[in-house]
Length: 315
Image 1: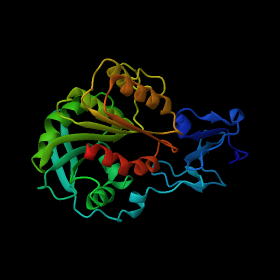
Image 2 (image 1 turned 90 degrees about the vertical axis):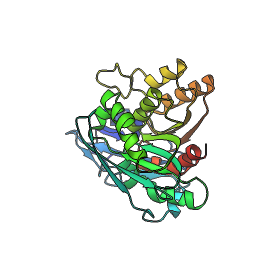
Image 3 (image 1 turned 60 degrees about the vertical axis):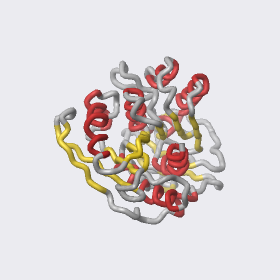
Image 4 (image 1 turned 120 degrees about the horizontal axis):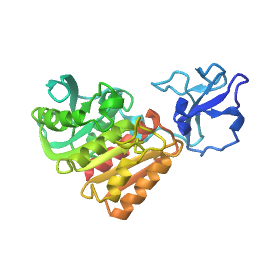
């Protein structure tokens, strides 16, 4: 990978893309692990992101200019590869007027064995993206059919504005806890076990919900959680914030929750992830942490979904 003659900066998951582009003049040679998946692009002199003319498109749903480097040992997770093209059951639509949010909100429900079968309820932030890009339905179906996970229900939550709803918003918290959960559990048979799942800001929202009502939830699963952010950050700082979750763990909150945290080794959140792992070890919280040689993208989170569901659903 060499910079094109017009390139002024490298943008990638290592620096949260355009938020902290790396000047080409500061680039030094670096090696990627053999099983790595690395996504990148370049900025030109006008600050416009452009694909590498010699690169391979990454298929990133956010940025058409993203290219990828895949190591010789990189491979699609076997469950993801074997999952059928479509989910076996239909989504249930869930529409309600939220008093907390002051507007109508929509969500969806999916049950691997049908809504009448008792099972855990997994509350999924960015549910639409987990469904489309994470392939949640087919992956959950295959794990259930193989007996690797029990029957489960998935509540797919969709934010109106991620940067508002998912960053310590009291209205969103009340909407999920007081309005959406009861409405969902009137439609499906929850066995009393509730689990939170999210990626990036969605993972932060999940941790916020869990610590607000630890009596309601059994586990928190986070893919590349945006855990550098704290409520007092103005604006929220994804690089040097107050690390709210880390402070909560140090203060002894969340000891009865099970934690499943995953992060890419090729993203800027890795040091924060490792500090959280150390805090979970120190406080004796039941947890599993995973690192994968990928970045802050749906390839990473889709790869991690089978292992995450096995971990949180089997208890």
